[in-house]
Every structure is written in structure tokens, then in C-alpha cells.
Length: 314
Ligand SMILES: O=C(O)/C=C/c1cccc(O)c1O
Ligand SMILES: [Fe+2]
Image (cartoon, rainbow, N blue to C red; front, top):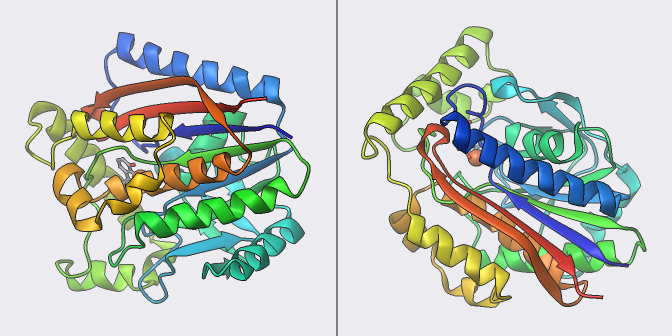
């Protein structure tokens, strides 16, 4: 069975702080093309790798990786809200398969997810509950972080697992590329935010949710005016990273240290590990080829915004 890979940056600022119309049209065109490709492929199962942003995973117990056998999207920043369509038995078997492959992964029977999961499902499939999806969380924000190598090995193990199912599988990597939005850090957070990061943020009061949303919107507006107001986007790094995936050199990314990536491209750039895992999963289906790729820095979205479509070589 062939597989299809779609990696896509996500950003909760879509519709809230948008780039100029020609750029927005260009990006919407890229998403529309990806969606058309997916429609033609007609996936029976989605394997979705995504980070979280202290909406579903907290420092009370922060796993490097987690697979959900059920998942609920909270609808942050106006993203889609509701239950994902998770095939519980397949997801549970995926956990066992990965553990048997010596990759330690957590399981959640009630996973809470945010725009990282919801946005690509909505943009690429039209809704979060259109196609059965195995949701895979990769901790990309809350230090200490897993390595690039472990993300690749997780992806490869899950790729081998879904390849056993004899289904048309769409593999999605959500996140990145270079960026550093104002996500709080445990060491420097005030007492209230620290408490939220330790777990009480799972059900944020409405006024705090609103304040959090507004803080990110304000940061994006400042970033448009002054691109040193946050860690700058790194166009060169992003393009280099994309080429690594396109040319099949994902193993070389094992050499990247987390510190180096944070220092060169920003602390949230670790979200690209979702692209690495997705591409490693794709590689288990055999040779792949680039169908299309896209890149543009979008300060309005605090994102090195990229897309990559890979198809199996038959
Ligand atoms: O959840 C937040 O506070 C911010 C999220 C964000 C902002 C910009 C780019 C991203 O990938 C994000 O997840
Ligand atoms: Fe993100």
C-alpha cells in the first residue's frame, strides 16, 4: 500500500493576525493543493504527529511521547473543538508495537489536544472527525526535550506499525518551522503561571484563556513591526531543514543538539521533530518523492511557514 505524507506548519494566529491578501491567498492555495492531493489519495487512516502548548500536557507528568486512544480538542484560538475520531484498538496496538520496538511511549485514554492537532485536520481534511486518526504527541516545548534521534525512531516504529494494517495511510507532521512565540517557561514563570504549567492549566478559566490568546496576538503584532521583539525567524535554517527531508537525509538530523536548534532557530523550532517523525514513518513505506514543498517566513503568524508533500514511489 502506498502512503502519503503531508507536513504543515501550524499557527493559532490564522484569522487573528493575517499577512497581506496576496500572501494569504498564496498560502491558502498551497493548503488547497494539499487538500486536493489528500482527497485523491482517499486516506483510510491518519497518523498525526503534533506538539502541545500546555493545553493537554503539563509538568505534573510530561512524557516525551504519547499516543492517544481517545482525544478531545479544546478549540483554543478558535480552532476546531470536539472529539477526534480515534480508532481506539488500533491506537492501543500502536502503543504496544512501539513499546515492543524498545521506544518508550506513554498512552492516554483521554488525551486533550490543542490547535497543533486540530488545525492540520481541519485544514487538510475539512474537520477533526472526518477520517480515523491515531494522535501522537511529541513534546516539543517543555524542556527537557526528547532528541531528534528518538523522534525519528518513534516515527519509524509507528510507520512500520501502520504499514502492517494494509490501509491507505496519510501521515501528517504538524508544527515548526523556526519560531519562538511567547510560550512561558517553568523556570521564569510567575507563581500563577507555574501552577498552570504544573497542571491546573488543563481547564483554564475563561478570563485567563482570553488573556493568553490576547498576549499571543499582541506579540504577533509587535513582531510584524519589530522582528527582534521575539527570537527572529531563521530562513536559512528552515530551508536547510526542508532540504534534509526532501533529499532523504533524516538520519543526519540525529546529530542536531536541542541546544543548537534553540539557539539558531528558536525554542519552539523543536516542533520540527513532528516533521522528522512523520518523514521517518513515511520512509518505512519505501522510497518517496517530493510532490511539492513551500516555504515563507510569516511574522504575522510568528512562523517559518512551510509545507511538504511526499508520495510513495511505486
Ligand atoms: O499556544 C500558544 O500560546 C502559541 C502558539 C503558537 C504561536 C505561533 C506559532 C505556533 O506554532 C504556535 O503553536
Ligand atoms: Fe506550535
